[in-house]
Each structure stands twice: as structure tokens, then as C-alpha cells.
Length: 318
Image (cartoon, rainbow, N blue to C red; front, top):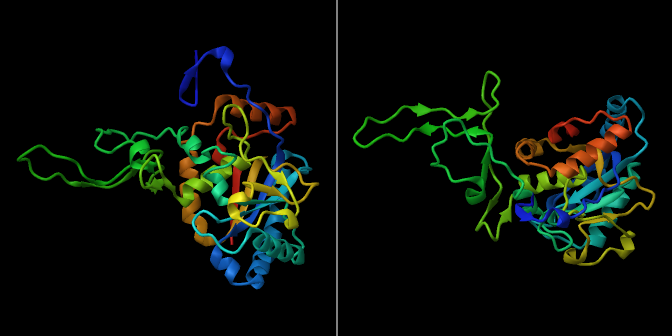
């Protein structure tokens, strides 16, 4: 018997884990929210003008890490259709492509944020939630509900007054404490979802964590990748968000969507979200077979791949 996604099944029935093509680097050119789109094409053009030099720098940094110039680099752009729905996919993607081309940037893939929640009929976010291994704080007495129940994940122990016995004097306040502390704590407590656990409304940091795992090629469902890119032109993109694939491949000559490393250029206002993303990813237990596949392929290409998922992610905050 063996355990797979929390279910014990016969070893002979274990699904074969399919490999996915991997680029050397996945460059995210930005996120698009409704206020960015309604601000007009000038806002989009400014985004790509600002990102272009950082994308070039990311290629150079990747070359230093690889010890060779990366020959497989893909670009992507994420559109928020989970928290707000605006315009139509053809209009939004058309404006994006035109603004990028004017700035000398090419978008290979466009993804919907809803695809980080559900893709190809698979509840991707719940799949990742099932692989969370929440870190119990030192001295935990069970007073705090587990992450699977509360929807909250932290990197340490909350502050506050410890519970005292009846008739005892109030206990002194204790500060929060980070588990892997270096001199001083940076404690974060992250809401992964709200609402009932069986009908969650996922938080932005959690969906962004799923997005990073997708770009790194580390998500499988019954051995199969989820949300494979679908090749289509802007003219062929469906008019409704619900009918648009999780990831659309716009460039037929693009390097693979998933990659050994990711780079994201974004506005500085996203810094708190990305701190939460890195905290979440530090507590996700990636399927061992998938992780080993990626490591073996990297070794076969002479690539020294960091063992920790968060160490494969780079940012530029603009």
C-alpha cells in the first residue's frame, strides 16, 4: 500500500507521474487588475516599459546561475478574474499584446487567476491545501485550531497572554515569535481562505502560491499536470472568462510555460503578498516523485537546482 494525496491505494495502482516540459526561466511580466485596465493603454504601456530592463536583467542573472546562457526562456502575464470580472478576454488580452509589442516585449502566455483555483475540472487550490504541512509552534497546547480548520497559516507562535489557571494572577503578555528566527522575529499570520472549508473563498497570497507552483512544474493530480497551456490566437480567445483556458499560449514558438526558476516583476505594493507567498511555499510538501523528477532533469542538464522551492523564485519590485 502507498499514500497518494492522502488516500491509501495499492502500489500497482499508483498513477504514473507525467513529466512536463521545462524552460530554464519563466519571466512574469506583471499582474493585471481592473483598475490597471480601466486606466487605459498608457498604464499598460508604462508597465511594460518599466518591466523590460528587469526582464533582461533576469536573463542575465539566470545565465550566471546556470553557468550558461539560458536558451529556453518564456514570458507570462497573470490576469485577475477571480476577485473581479471586467471587460472580456479578447479585449483585455488584445490590449495587453498591443501595449507589450509597443514596448518591445513579447507575451508568450496569458493566465487567469481563477485557473489557480480550478483548472481542467480539478480543484487545484484544494489540491495544494492538502499538501500543506503547517508548522506547529514551540510549546503549542492545541488552543489554536489547525490550518485545515481555521484557514490561517503562520510562521511561528502568536503573541498574547498565555492561558492561566482559575483564580491565578493574569499572565504576562508574550510577543509573537518566528520559528526560524535570526536575532529578531518577523512574524506573519496569513489567511489562506475565508468562508466554510468546503466552499472556500481563496486569498490572493494562496492563489499566488499556487501560481508559483504551477510555473515551477510542481503540481500534479493523479499523476497528470493540471492547466496545460492551450495554443490560440487573440482572435480565438473565448469571449467569456469561464470558457477561457487556465493558461493561453499566444506564441507558438514559445519555450515551455513551466520552468526550473521563476522571475516576477511587480509593483512594490505586492511585497506583503509575496512575503505571504514565500511563507506558504515554505510549508507545502511537494509530491516526492514530482520533486525528484525535476531534480533529475536539472542534474541531467548540468543545472544546480536549489532544494527549497522558494530559492527558485526571484523578484523585482518596481
